[in-house]
Length: 294
Image 1 (cartoon, one colour):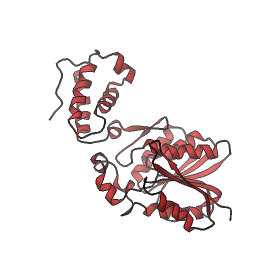
Image 2 (tube, rainbow, N blue to C red):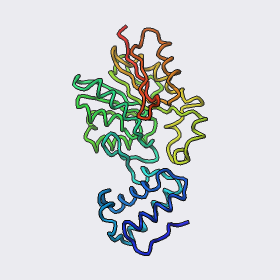
Image 3 (cartoon, helix red, strand yellow):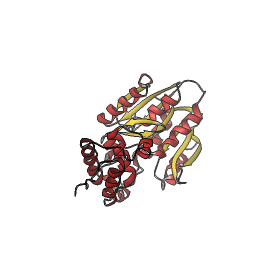
């Protein structure tokens, strides 16, 4: 079913029509989706949307927005339709080759900035970089940071590289097409590992919204049956890659704190300061540890 065309094409009328259409579909935030797609096509701000409800919209603009709204109605994420998503105050290009950045991942940035701000030059790795939002943001927030961003997908790395150029930090980042579960780095060569690896179990994946299952790359979400497969390998590799006092911070599923903390405990004497960082919803979201000196 196509979107019903209003008799008069004004901003208010088309937003109402698009919101009503999306409300009848199984999509998240129908009104917000309508607003964002209209703003994108019309090249206007949210303030314009509110203060100029009677502004006329051309037939061409109506059709362009309607085409996007119908795709949204089928479940395609708004970020892919717009080609971008905001992360830590910056816009990042996204594509179907990349996971869409989530607000929860910003806690990684906060912790790294808190640990390294004003401390001078340091080298970090972002493993499973996707859009490059972690690597680019760390480099943008900390001018002394030098980073290596790793991803198995060449298409994702192309997006990440473009994002680093957009935000003026490409000269301090190296983009590496590789498998972060393999021995990529020299012994004690890194000061920080900041990573959002795949951590969704097969059972959890089956229950995800179809907007995620049908559009976002499965390999960026699911590492294996339990969802813990990559985490265990990363923690094991990190104890070799990190320098003494180097930090490890990794996003995880909210039920995975116990198994991930036990990985640090199994490596007796190698780690200290292990902790869980919760997201704004109060859910366990990051695991953190410091490489010991011995």
